[in-house]
Image (tube, rainbow, N blue to C red; front, side):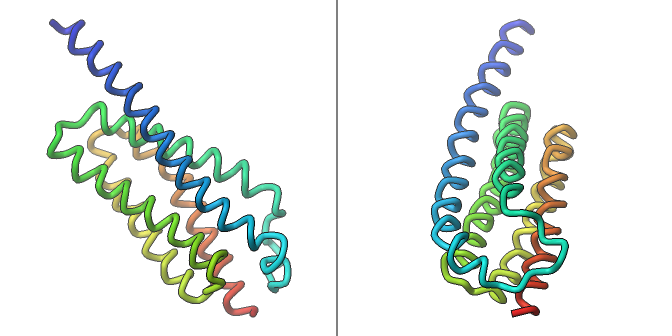
Length: 165
């Protein structure tokens, strides 16, 4: 019986991973399309802090973060009971929507100040997602910590770009 349960859990994980990869990279693609429209026109005209990373770093960093996000969500999906999973995954979906919203606000609408406030909400939603994921899977929680740190750094950049422009 234990073998059947572990096989079911393994299958649940892989199916969840595929689903969350599709979802997170769909969000990445939409956000990337919005960003691409401004990254070579509007964004270069902004004053940025001296420690602003080079443009080429953002793609690989975000790709790795989206991969870790999908893996984290799949771990939670496959390990939690439905009521616990529902709340944890709801927070994951909230932060994912806020993530996309930031790209739309900052790069799409050029609303730098409003985007900063939105980013604060995103950071808090990621922290809440980690809080919900941690008791289910510490690995899932740990996988989101680089994302939280990067969004914190992005918040600093967003704030300084707002103040410098």
